[in-house]
Length: 129
Image (cartoon, one colour):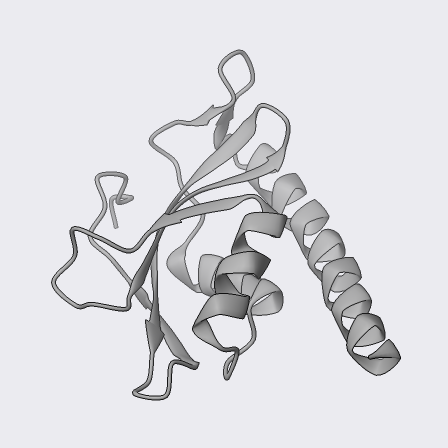
């Protein structure tokens, strides 16, 4: 039990550091509208989103535990309305009160209900390339 608590505390602490770094990155590239706290047309690249999400919810995490970890980290998600049952569609990440970022990631679970990957979803915030 103590070992699980220490692992969970370590994971939350690492996620906090990652959230701080990601917040700094987002502020430096102008992704936040300070008045409203919402993302403008600039977004964090999907690879950065995936890395940050996997810091919060590592591969192999059971579905129920993943839901708890996402909620504790401030990530909103839905499980309905998508073509695949059991997929968590990540919507926003509130890193600090009033600082919400749009996410376009979905968590994929294997037949045993463990996280097996993070995939990009379509979004309306694509950057021109």
